Image (cartoon, rainbow, N blue to C red):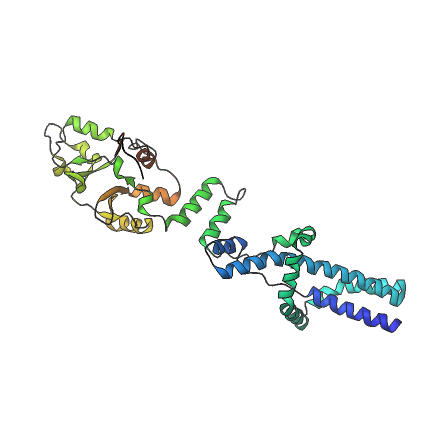
Length: 338
């Protein structure tokens, strides 16, 4: 009887060490990244996401089995060796089974055995998911990768960093992360709210007063319509203009005009601003039609996530003004949007 108990105790001890040595492999991607990729149709990510949900319960199962085997060994040790030796043996096993399980070849054997039976283990866990949800250990859900595998994941971390980053710090980081993918069309001043001046317009006192009331420091000079911009008028340079000798906008303007496509990125636009040393670009579509204006200020505001308001700004957000359709563009009582 004693020999049988010793054999059973040895089997339980070996099982305890092998179970304790199991470390189910986790995905190198975070749950957020797996969910993002799964939503984009990545089949491998969907499989990994499902496995990650089950691995949490597998870890709980391993800990429960370890506890059961440890208690079982203690009972067997007491039955085999009596109370005194049995309790001492059980204490020693409770202290040493962890380090023994981490010994190189033992750990490899545990991992090899687990890998062979993982599909069946996952099926069992999935079948009894409701039961495992009850016994799931909270600490198991906190295990995960420390790496960041996409810009979207980093953005998610920043957005949920309350108490770590201030609102201004979060805006700055999030703006920087999205800057390279933002398009010119998303920040430009729309065509419907562009103030311009005809090249033949005389810059007399009344005209100058009206120009300053627009709230802009620079205005496009047009030849007929906004699709034909021939120069940029710098209002600050007009302060030194002799009002007694009125001149035309064409003579006072800067004839250099730079165009940028609406589907270009702000990263490209910033590089263009730095290269040309200009502060205002005319935004055109694929048909070379003017669709808006892009100022260096617009790009900087997007980069830092803060609005820059100066003495020339009559409105905080010209895109909001355009959306309200102040000019009543393309409106008719019988008209209908389709």
